[in-house]
Image (cartoon, rainbow, N blue to C red; front, side, top):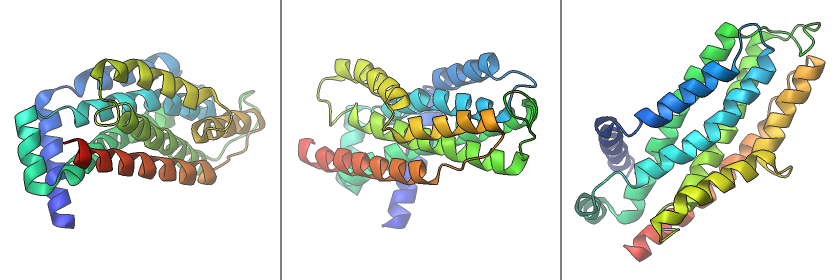
Length: 226
C-alpha cells in the first residue's frame, strides 16, 4: 500500500510540475514575501507574516492538485489504485509543494530579519525562533490543505463555488480567535513584542487533526461520488 501511494504521489508531482500551474502560486508567494519581509525587521514578526501568506497559497495548490488530471485520466487512476487513494495522493502532493514554499520562506526570513524583539531591545535566539516560525508555517500549511480539500470536488459539487469559499475560509481561519492559525500567529506577534519564543505545539497538533479529518472526508466522498 505504501509503495502504491508513493508511486501515486510521484505521478501527481510530475503532473503538477509538467502543468506549470504551480507557477502563479509560487510567484504570488514570492511577491508576498518580497513586499512584506523587510531587511532588519523583527524575526518573529516576519515569520508570522510568512506563515499568514502561506495559508491561501496552500489552499490554491490543493485546488490545483485535485483538479489537475483530465477526467479520463482521473478515471483510469481511480480504477487502478482506488479513488480515495488517488485523491489522497493529490492532497499529499499539494502539502509537499506547500512545504517547499515554507522551507524557502523560512530561509528567506532567517537571512533578512533581525533576531530581536519588535522594539529591537531584546535579543531573540535564532534557532528557536526559526523552529517556531517553521512550525507556525506548518500550522497554516495544514489548514490550507484542509480548506483546499473541503472547497474542491468532491466536497463541493459546483466548481464555481470553490474559489470564493476557499478565500472566505482562509480569511476566517486567519482572523477567528479559536483557529489554530490565529493562535500560532498571535503567539509569534506577542513573542516578538516581548522578545520570547513560543513554539506552537498545540496549534500544530490541532491543525494536523483538522487536516486529517478534512482529507479523510474528501477521500471518502471521492469513492462515493466517482
